[in-house]
Structures are given as C-alpha cells and as structure tokens.
Image 1 (spheres, rainbow, N blue to C red):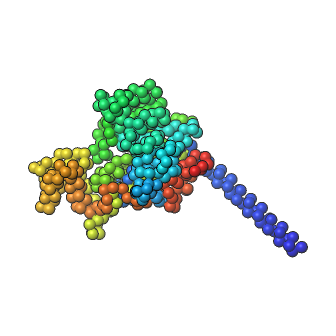
Image 2: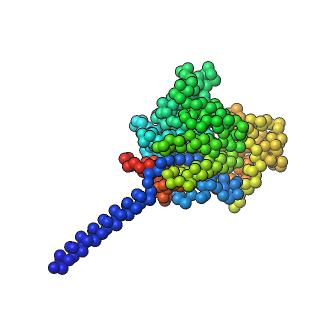
Image 3: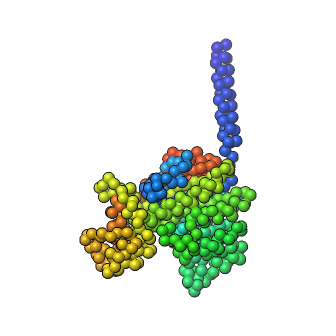
Length: 449
C-alpha cells in the first residue's frame, strides 16, 4: 500500500511539474511574440573605452546607457594564424551567419562555402531589408550581410552581389565600386552598376537632399566615392548623418506589412581608432548614438521591434587615462576642429606647424619636444606616409592623457545591449555567433546551426 502511494505521489509530482513547465512556456510565448522588425547596430571597433569617451564628451550620458538588457560579447575568429583577434569581415560574418570563419572572409565558412545570412533569412520570411553605413557600402561589415566572397577586398564583385540580393535600402559610400574607370570609378569590367540599379527599380541618390525626398520603393544612396566623411568633417548640407540615413531607412522599410531587418554600421569609429584620433572617435560615437536614438524612438510605444546594439571588435586598446597618470583631459580634444588624417595633416608643412596647430587643434604652446617630433615626422614621410598623421595624433593623445595599446584591433570583449521583444536574451556573456542565433529566434524561427 505504501509503495502504491509513493508511486502515485511521484506520478502526481511529475504531472504537476510538466503542467508548470507547459503553462510557464505558454505564458512566455504569449508575452513575447516574434519580433516583426529587427534593427541591428554595429559600432565598428567600438569597445567600452570608446563608449566612455563618447559619454564624457556628451556630458556623461548616452542613449545606449538607457538599455535595460546588456551583456558582453567575445569576438575571436576561426583563423589558423590570427586566432584571437578578428577583422571586421570575420566578425560581421559571425554576427550575420552564426558561423566563425577566417579573417577577410565575407559570409563564407573556413572551407570558403557560402553561409546563409540573417538578411537572406529575413527576405525568405517576406521582410524588407536594409543596410546603412558610414563606410563604403561594399566594405566588410555591410558586405557580410548581403554578399558572399572569399576576400573582403573584392569590392567590385561584392557590389554586384549586393545588388543581386535586391536589398531594399542601401545607404553609404563606395560609389567607386559601382562605376567604371572611364567614369572615375574602379570597375575594370566597364559596367555601370548605378544604371543597372535604376533598371532594377532603385531610386539612386547622391546627396542628403535627394535622399530626404524619397519616401518609398527601393533606394540606393552612394554619397561619396569611398567612405563617408568623419562626423567632425561632414558637410551637413551634402552628406546625410548616420541618424538621418537610419531614419530614412526605417521610414521606407516599415511600410512592408511583414516587417523588416535593418543593419546600421558606425563604420568610421574603427578608422579613427586605428590612427588614435580621439576627438574624431568621440564624435563618431556620438553620431552612432544619435542613430540608435532614432531606432529607439521608432520602437518605443510598440511591441514588435527588437533593437540591438553591439560592435564587431575593439580597435586601438583605448583607455580613458594613460601615460602613467591618474587623469584625463577631454578639453584638449574638444578644441580639435577637424580630423587629423583627412583635413589637418594634409595642411601641414614644416613651415606652418605652429599656425595649423593653433587654427585646427587649439594648441598655442607647442613644446620644443613636440616641434622636434613634428619635424622628424616630415623627414620620415617619404618612407612612412603616415608619419605626420601619427605624430599629430601622438601629441594630442599625450596632452589629453588618452591611452592606446595598438594601432590594430584587439581581442577585448565588446558590449551588446537590446530593447524590445526577446531583448532579455542578450544578457550575460555571449559569443558573436550567438547574436545571429538570438535574432533568428526573435523573428520566430528555430536555431538550426
């Protein structure tokens, strides 16, 4: 009798447990239906130090600080040589496909076979798709979502592949890869991809005003031959900001009744970090943050839009404080008027160093050691074209006490944060491949890798 009671009680407990699990699952499922829209932000090269720098510049507050759900992301590639430090293409491939691969790969695996991307999956579900960037649209990060290539540098081929993918909105730079050499571009096959895009139904725009006038349909915006300008140098009358491009993309894509997938890249954070231009890093981080605000403003008040913010890797080993001192002087960087690489360094000669430093960097008291550093940089310029840029950046970083450990990428973890349906899954420590898996789950599909 006792044995029978024990067995009966045990069976009852099992039934109750199963009932609790089932009802809990139903409750969660009802509370979190699949996301209709996904907006993925990637700050290229944007580590925690970059966010801190931007936060200090803005007055100790960023839009991304308001995300309730956040975590950390590992970024290492599957590369036989560079095992722990990824490039943008391998990292973007991991985020876009859930597959780790070698550095320089564009959504192909280590065997160089194409791997389906989240953008392609979204298209299969009938969703509109878009890619927005401040780099060339054919550059590594956007390319990994809408192209497959064994080499990230094959941007002429990538341009063709991206158009063939029929992405609804493409906004960024890189016009040179869409037109022939005869037209001033880099295509050797004589093709005019802009003309081909128009035949495919794209409205093609080349400046901010033209972009703002478009309200529907397929849109291709190529605003410069190569990358867009750093935010500090941007001609606001001609080049749209990252926030403006994001807003336009959402305006167009949100007209699709099935929803949309949009990737937005703050691509030039990385470029400024490679050359240690802290003032430019800060302003590009703030421009990225403004773009995030656009998506959050769209997502708030509705329960169908997942917004994710992350980075592909960290660049430069940036630290707030450096050179053995417990201090940081952001005021030094705030006086800088333009980018060192693209505006200030080209204006410098051995004879006008003090004048340029005064006019563009706000420095009136160059030391003897700093003058010697600059004059030596000019002597080295023939052997090292970046010598002058590096010297100016070094002076600014030391005066601001902004630390750097590398001119390349690092293997440091990067942030991830999310808002909207399934945002709670983007917490704790995850791998970059998990971002793909969680996006697939969020739009209502099973993880199949």
